Image 1 (cartoon, rainbow, N blue to C red):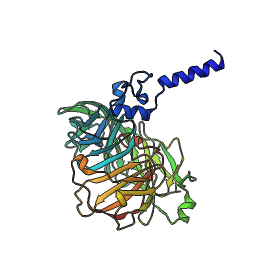
Image 2: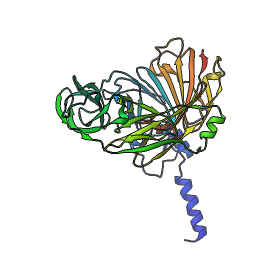
Image 3: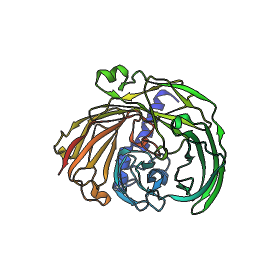
Image 4: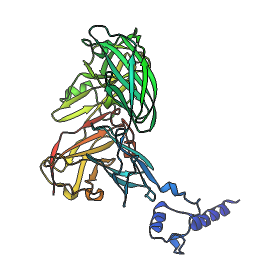
Length: 425
């Protein structure tokens, strides 16, 4: 084909078959696709599959799904089913979503993912499928020792005690889980662990499963030192922390079996820049978290997973907290707008000072400016009165859709602004 003919073919093809997403969306909304209007010619691309317009996901507090909850997706209102699942069949490619939970309202600005697992961590009674496990530990405790118990698996949590039996909570009617047992001296804490064992269990809701665990000695320990790493873009190193007036705290260590961290126990604190010996256990690691404060501002590294055998020196990274721009303290937002700057995704948190039992409002956005959501769209009274406003940023995330899934707020770095009081009319 000659260059001239190729150019004519391209022009002809575009005149008869080129689409833009904006024009197509407008024509589709007006029901004019194929009507004969020049701008609304039928698409020459493959027919769109219906499920490409679906928006669906879970709504939960951790693993505790929220049935019969109201979710506003763009201009549609839907309700979660008994499994905490919401679904809308005709959602724009970019959409705002507001979900109402028991104690919180959460808004995603300009989401695009077709599936979001919206999970907030809050200490509430677990209402997931529950199954009892009667655990027997073969080992006999030495005087001064005690046991610690953990659970790991796909979306599971555990409550109870060895004496009364454990209850495993799961999103599934049948679930596979692993119960871990660690023996340690009470006066040394979990860092002095001397034995560890585990048992795999298959549980079913409303039934009791017997299980037995034998503990083997923990022979190996490795020395670990925690330091502040050189600052990343927008980050804070040791010199920046000191120069800007931030005061670092001790490192919080938690034994990690890959389960929900809010269910784990026995955090221990160790100083920065000081070697500490950590026991090395099979199928287990540790997480390290440190924060620095300046007045009401908090710089936090999230929880950094690591294994002592891999990294004898662990660099922890902090980021400068976001800055609230407007409204000023004690004033009314102009047009309901909130303006803050910070790295990555911002989460605006609004807690009522006049009515503490009102839901906490979360607004997730990748923009510096956003608006307070309309609570009446999810069946609540409009937000009015005095609110405590803080802003958290997630520098490792670039868009709001990444705030999806269990533990999503626990592992990444984050920082929190100083609080302001704002008044909503």
